[in-house]
Structures are given as structure tokens and as C-alpha cells.
Figure 1 (cartoon, rainbow, N blue to C red):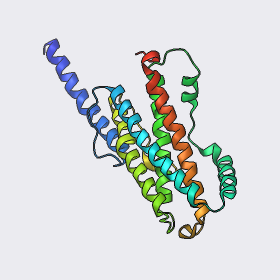
Figure 2 (figure 1 turned 180 degrees about the vertical axis):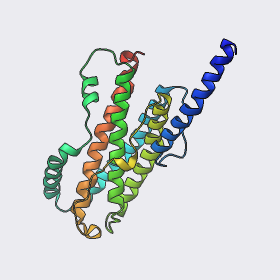
Figure 3 (figure 1 turned 90 degrees about the vertical axis):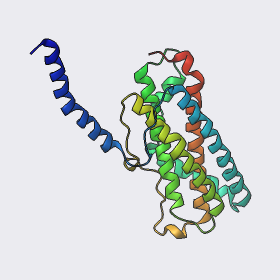
Figure 4 (figure 1 turned 135 degrees about the vertical axis):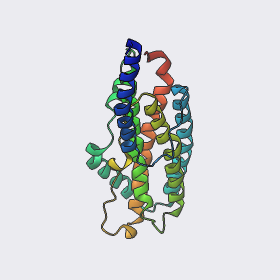
Amino acid sequence: MSILATLKFIIFVISIFIFPAYGQQEKILDDNLCPQMISVLCVKKVLLDIVFETQKMKDSAHKIEKYIHDHEPTPASLVEYINYTMKHMKSNLPKSYYHYHYRNTKSNINRTDFIHLIQEENYAFSYLYNSINNILNIKHVFGRSIDELLEKISNNLKINVLCNYRNIFHVYSESWLPISKINGIQILTTRKRKIPPLLHHAYSIIIIRLLEEWIANANHIIANIDSKYFR
């Protein structure tokens, strides 16, 4: 057997073992959140699409804030409960270690750093996606106006943000944490359908604050990626 024929045979044998394993890995990672992976020709364009969609979410978030401001009868109690709750859930919130470093460094960002940044964003937006769904599952009788806006944000997060991050990970052959492995904000009540309007308002505001924080992180990356990123 010639050297060329031998090499072809070796490649064929390797492909038998490697490609099924890779396919199995993709299957394990697939939690059916996104219908399919889409080919990405320009990662920066995908990031721009994500940022564009997050601006729509900010519009819905502002409408929620205004609605709560206009309808909450005890604003002082609302602020107090929000501050208390955020203080006690701080250790469980998505961390922004790499984003903090990115904001405070003048050095270039390499491929590994970039992956860490979008992994942080993907985790944070997944956390918020699950948090929103936790509120929506309550189906609060007096929270329909807020829930409609939260559902709009949730759908946008799923289709235009989380699935786009997965497309980017697919380009770099990076894995992602399934949505089922990420906990959102838990609604601390034993009778979910009897949750007081104040708590519904409070959790909605907390999610909005976190959403705006991570939207700002995503915006900062795309605004500075050309000046800092190198392969």
C-alpha cells in the first residue's frame, strides 16, 4: 500500500471515531431552545444584531418601569423590598468578572478573552430569560400588562440573543451551558398565584435592572471590539 493510500485509510478510520463523537457532543449540548444552528459569516455582525435587539428590550423595560411607577400604591415599600432582595441574592447573580477586566484594561483582547466575554453574557441573559419565565408562570391576575411586556422581552431574548450566541459558539467550536442548568431568580412564596402585587412589581424591576446592566456590557464590547480585539 502506498504512503498516500495509507494516509487516506488512517484519515478514514479517525473520521469513524471522531465525527460521531463530535455529533454526540452537539446532541448533548442541544436543549431544544433554538431550532437550528445558522452559519455565521461575520461574528461582529451577529454581535451588532444582538445589540440592536437589546435596544428593543430596553424600550419594553422602560414601559414596565413607567407602568409600575404609575400603579404602585406604596413606592417606598417597593424600593425597600427591592434593595433588601437584591442584597440577599447578590452572591447568586451572574458575575461580570471578564467584563470588568475588559472595561478597565487598555491591552488587547485575544480569542480566549473574547470567548469568556460572550460566555458571561450568554449565562447572564440565560439567567434573565429563566427569571422572566418564573414570573410569567405565576400568571398574576393584576400583572397582565407587565407580563405581556415581559413575554415580549423573553421571546426576543430567546430568538435574537441566546440563539445568536449559540451560533457564535458554534463558529468557535465552543460549548455552552444548557438553559436547564441555569437557575433564574426564584419567586420566594409558597402560594405563587397569591403573590402580592408589590412582589410582582419588585421582581419585575429587579430583572429590568439586571437586564439593563448586561445590555450595557454587550454594548461596550461591540463599541470597543475593533480597537482591542486581535486574533
